[in-house]
Length: 228
Image 1: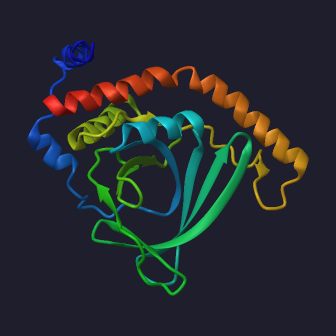
Image 2 (image 1 turned 60 degrees about the horizontal axis):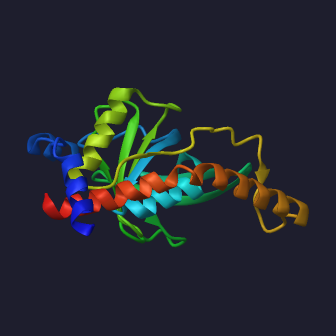
Image 3 (image 1 turned 90 degrees about the horizontal axis):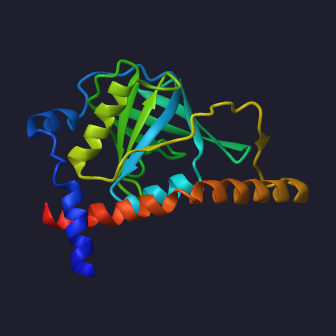
């Protein structure tokens, strides 16, 4: 049975070709342009080196995410306010980063670099940023000034993840209304906590119904990677 499963996985992927190496070299090269960072960036899609982690995150959490970038007094230094919405509740957090040589580097309270930098990769999308992050798990993230991107722009992002040999792209929730939601903080009441719990369970049950096929695809692709 195990051999049969492997055979099915291999046969199902025989027709899938690796993107041309030249195209991959271009797509995985850090950008040589300085993007206009100021303003709101909508987080559209993401992928990671771990298919299972990506699948679970998108099935169980599926947040809306946006990032408001404002300039600081120092050159190339910015504040970014991350806005998160999930299950009808919102929260946000502000951090500071410096942009140098196609890299975004977080700064601590003493304005000292902290953590691994995020690398801004090439993209043909005129108002998009593709970030490669190595914080906890290697991740690729597509952000745009628009609330959605074209099929061609999304396809290019999918090709970038294929070049890395990573899991399939997952679409984030694109409901970016951060004004009409309850603020999630330490002062949340018991009633609000109960509402949040009910919303989470209801949404999870709906999304979990399609998760099993995604998990199968994760294992199928993992098996295929041993033969490729």
